[in-house]
Length: 66
Image (tube, one colour):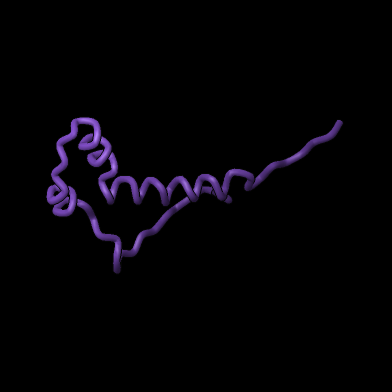
C-alpha cells in the first residue's frame, strides 16, 4: 500500500485567486462588465467609486500552505 501527500499543491493558485478577487472588487470590474453589456458607459462613476490600492495595507490570513 502506498500513501502519498500533495500538501501545498493549491497554494499558488489560491493565492493568485485572492489577489485577482481583490483587484476585481476594488476596481469594480463587475460594473465595467455591466456597462459594456448595457452600452451605457459612465466612466466617472467608476472613477469616483473605485478603491485606489496605492499606500494600502492588506492582511491575508490563510490556513496551512494556502
